[in-house]
Length: 295
Image 1 (cartoon, one colour):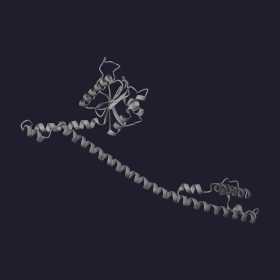
Image 2 (cartoon, helix red, strand yellow; image 1 turned 180 degrees about the horizontal axis):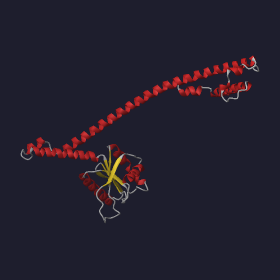
Image 3 (cartoon, one colour; image 1 turned 90 degrees about the vertical axis):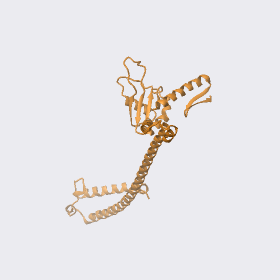
Image 4 (cartoon, one colour; image 1 turned 45 degrees about the vertical axis):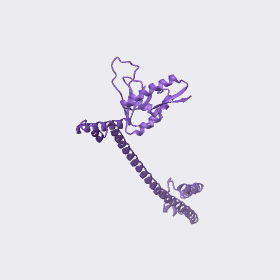
């Protein structure tokens, strides 16, 4: 039986009746003994020993007091059982809480392992991409690369891997109006709230705004996060900005490397060409390629 069951089973009407009965008993006895005190402390022995008080009245009051105490014992017993049930449920709830905390710690540990694995995979992939194996180079021409050159190649590859890992935690936002007194963090926070996200981030404009430059041109904003999770969530919801009156002209994209930006520009040019050549088709970029579908 749970606490809710005990409370539902309890006769609350009887409790209210018992409360009224007890109050009436005190009022009747105090009135008969001429006790002016508002509380029960005025019912002292001297009051009951007055000559005007008859034994039969005292006997009646005593019998009623015994009935009241009997009812009190029953109610005390009920609440004692309720307290025991509450204590038992509290212990069970604490056990559940401990279990949930253990699951959360396990989940955090698993996420940390996955993040570590992803970083290691990124470094390994980039190193393989940026440099040839030492044995292959030496096999082609033993005099082409010295030990120092090999070390420099490794440093370059690792540096590139680190930069790519850093970029994976960044976003670049285009189209946010720029002003001299702007509060960039507040503006970006409002933008993220528009797509249902409230991440922790740091934001700054990219580049330097020169005097006399076109006021209509607004520099892009670079946002950095503590993890890639926030980046993925915001990118997946970025299309919702098209429905926003305030941010419908704003565009969010990943923080791409120079090579990736060049490849993206080429894809955009290819997309524009496809739109011109086949206006009846639906054109879009997916997985690094331009796709066309019959509209």
